[in-house]
Amino acid sequence: MDLKSKCAVVTGGAMGIGLATTKRLLKEGCTVTVWDINEKALCSAEEELKDFSGKIFFHTCDVTNKEKVYELAKLDIEQMGKVDILVNNAGFVKGGDLLERSDEQWEKTININLTSLVYTIRAFLPQMYERNSGHIVNLSSASSTLGVPGLAVYTATKWAVWGLTESLRMEAYDNKKYGVKYSTIHPSYIAHGLFQGAKLGFPGNLLVPLVKDHDIIAKAIVESAIKKGRFSPKRPRTVNLNVRLRGLLPDSWFQRIMIFFGVSGSMKAWTGHKLES
Image 1: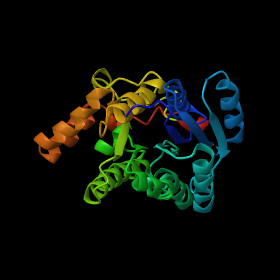
Image 2: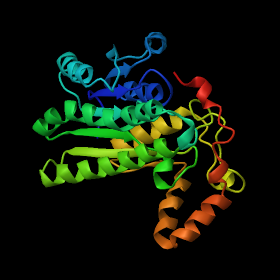
Image 3: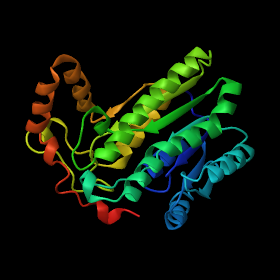
Image 4: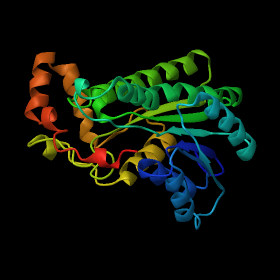
């Protein structure tokens, strides 16, 4: 997709991957609308982005509030004239074993990471179908390729995001809407932000090192997914080994290899909870 003059909505766009993605889209000549629940972060992002050329809009939005999502989607289409790109980046991390957290905390994880995508996609998909043009990018995770202790519910949502996206891609195909594209993005642990402190043990961290900064993921979103049409970019690229090994090895062997790589203890030093809202 040629991004010049395209219009995009980025959820969770005021911080981290979302903000880095917004910057890249603006540099490509897009008009961008940023959604975020954090009003303080929105104000900070507005100040940081003021020197970028191109139009940019900011809206406070809780993506789990479907009425608000549908209301803002209509406003975005009015303000920008259309929405060519939707980046579903808003996410929530609550670490801990299944029995360590409340039902409400796990429900919040599911609602933000999965249920909200049903609302945002339903809000923008009709006009993409009408024009037979658009690209929806959903943030999944490297954890969608394997099980991660201490992240069971989070991991479940990210497996679901991958399945949802692939199914919607097939729906577009069946409806002959070949111009409507879908991608998932699968980051491994990022050194800073909500996953700070989490990392694979030796030798896994040699094979799948920490992602150094959010812009690496933003680049995968803009360059690999949207511009090149890749279905499921993974960063670092060695995350693809999880999928390959699953296809080649018996399950029991794959599980032992993941333990050997330190997946089982990868959340033990996690400090990203200090950054949770």
